[in-house]
Image (cartoon, rainbow, N blue to C red; front, side):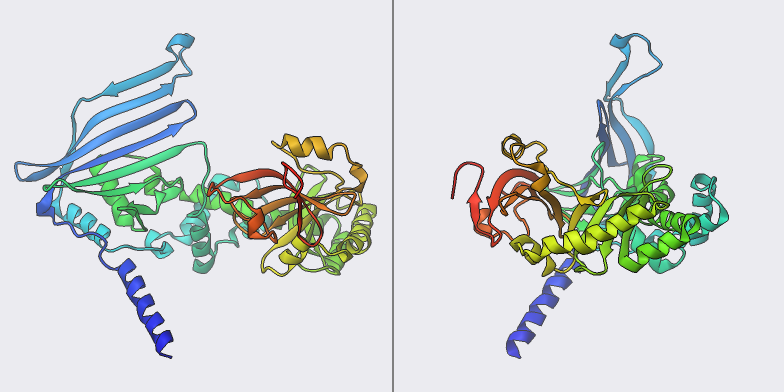
Length: 447
């Protein structure tokens, strides 16, 4: 009991430390606040620097540098198409009230370690109207109602907003920075490089915090307009996420019900529908979990809902062919089945397994695997959540080849067989294992 109470006490101290004062700065101890707003894109960038300084008893904000490189498509001459600017002209922006600075200092003194969607003050009716009028113009009333059903309560909306905060992409790299320079010379750094609307979390001396008061101060002090820090396009982000995460699947199931109700019932008898997406005008991409197999098993492929013969071939593949394959146990499949949330995906093509392999960016694997009998090979993917995705091929001799995994982990493989380099990326390898998990070949020699 004493050990447990000690652990709880230490946990409370740790969590209280996170929520308590991160940095304490007095406005009287500030020499200046330097701010930077910028981003880089494909072949372009911009950076604007600002200083907030005390002058004649008032805090005044100035833009002190403007830099950019961008393409002007209206210019015909290729030599003049790229525009450059690098100006150190000082431009007065506005006087910033002392109360505004004090609100910033309060925001960085108490860390908010998680997003509270309530703080965004989003109205469901207003969002619904914005999304309906901007993005759902061509839909019938039934589909509009279905689309809106995914964010029509605070709980659904808040879950969606939390999901959006973990999204990212890679075609632009924004950054917003505040450096609070003290009179003694040391500096508090408040930085964000997030690519989402509102660009949270900020990092206060490298500690993440979700506080919109920092956003408000930055917008006010720099005078930036139409900036993602203000979250002006949050309605588009909500539309985009609902469309990708939920609506495409829901619309395709609805299409199946309307077009082929009997075939839709047949699918539901044999499979749990994980996901369905329209592939082209008459075909669908599907992810099904066969009801007669373990719930961790997923079958993916393309089907036409009006082709009953395709549905029967798919069912036979799942309940006969794949069921027989799974009776021969393999360590990575057994490990995945024992792991909550882990799935094993097999590709079905016209009632048969995808007989092939994955060797992208992997010449050694390609040279070896292309010599084998393709019809005796089974490709499958193991997915155990974010950043856990392994690509396997069962070989004609009964062994298994691993050709790709992410970071320093692959499901079921003993740690001694994984080279730990700390690099966060997909690793393209060629490792052959026996069904019981013994490493036979590591790409460089027999083990």
